[in-house]
Length: 232
Image (cartoon, rainbow, N blue to C red):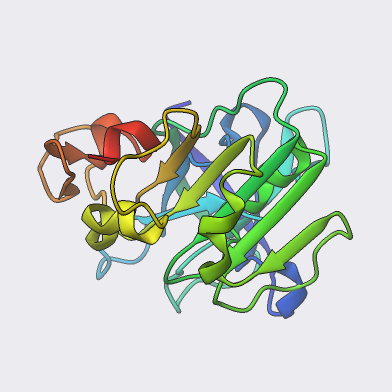
């Protein structure tokens, strides 16, 4: 979809929700994990850049044939109010695409909790989350461990999904515990989300970041990248 109206239907202040707000939006506009929505208040003349919102938590709930409710992760403008109609665009960007028979899934987030990766947890029988930030209530089949435990778990996982700040992309091999050669059997993808003000319309360069091989534009080539693209 291009442009449409969404409504802020709930503020999720309870820590177990692992999300900031719940939005009502058209079913056709639901993002896949890793895709994002650009949302703004048309009445707010002071805000020049739309907020980038990602699905968080579990599958969206359908409230009618055309409308769904989706928990999303912020950050959010403090002026947004419950029940407020907002203008949105999306879903935008390249989302996660897991192999069909993924059974053991590792999720890891640096600098934030793993809320933006949690929608992937429904796709695997065994899930481990590696994160040093607090997480709310999770289903019993999800194990939570500190980030320091991730390198030892890479041989266990069929697939790894990472949420990585752009400034850490060049440090990715050391974050995963690789001192020399990267195993060719490692399969995974990485969500990288600098500010993407143009949402892919203009390739303005604001969202560019350096990798071991070349400079990437998150809006044009991501925000989800193949792990192999980012490793030397």
